[in-house]
Length: 439
Image (tube, rainbow, N blue to C red; front, side, top):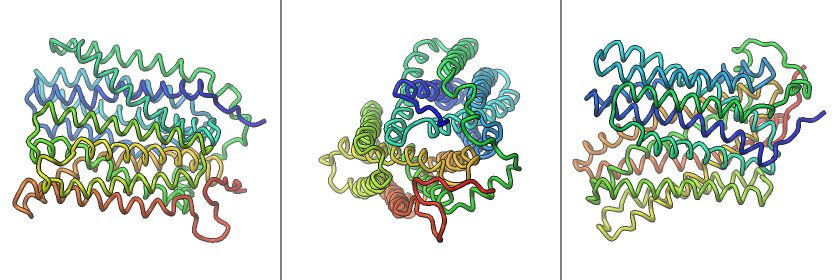
């Protein structure tokens, strides 16, 4: 008996898990960041290192995915991951509040807390995407990829809007209480969202998993040329994507003299472009019924569009105040959103490409590449900016250098994207075809 495919309501339900996940994560990476730096006057490297730690621990995503492969079910890993994430979020808030009176003990507790946050995100996020990939029809995968990502962004927006009011005036007790409430609501929403989606007999619809050691499973997946190449593409493209995060707003202020409010509005314009790009992929992917060649084309097109915008930004200062910075930021957002949504949809297509029973490891490998790239990208962007300033002797020249380097990463991503899903060697599985299970 084949597995029951999810309808739009089922996709939206699983998207709620991404919303809940985003709600907890945004508190740990944004609100707690601000409290450490502003209220406690700690160096900015403290929250920066903790956020990097939460990304670094997600290198365990392949191992977590292997655990769900061996169990044959994803739901327990999603629920368990959300529980660990919630506990980590609450401990992170308590640690941040504690830093106000005892910095060292608070910091040590924060290290444990951010490790838990990373583990929770890795466990829940990996298994959620594997479940979506297994239960969503190919024609709906582009739309579902956009939907779950947009719902995660919605979790960021709603949480920051509501908690921003609840956290004033600041106190350590208020911080912990609000974070605990968000974590509890996120956990309850996740449990209700996944209830009954996978089904009690999901594992009966397919061959039982073959017990194996994680090291052997990871080696098998890495030996698959399709999976290995896509992992490399994910790392390079997400490195390019994340390298912009800490650069665009300062660029608007330093080079074009914009105020904090004006540059923040530009950032909003860029994020609006990201959403527009994702919605575009959802529509186009549905119309074309999720054709793999179409997805590959949008990935390449999005990366090349980002390449072109970044080259333009590198020399934007030559046009002075007449340069349409808002339009450029929006175009960059559209390019980022389009290629990212198409890449996620492709990821959902490729997770089943290869030996059966390795879907969790495969998705974990893709997710680990993305997490590492995000952890390194923002920091790398600031380093390149500082080096560029030293080389050129000017702030404007520093931004030109970082935009040119980022553009080169997007160009490399486009070249890698041309070969996505194309296995080398005879008899190897191609894009969109599942290889038979090994005996």
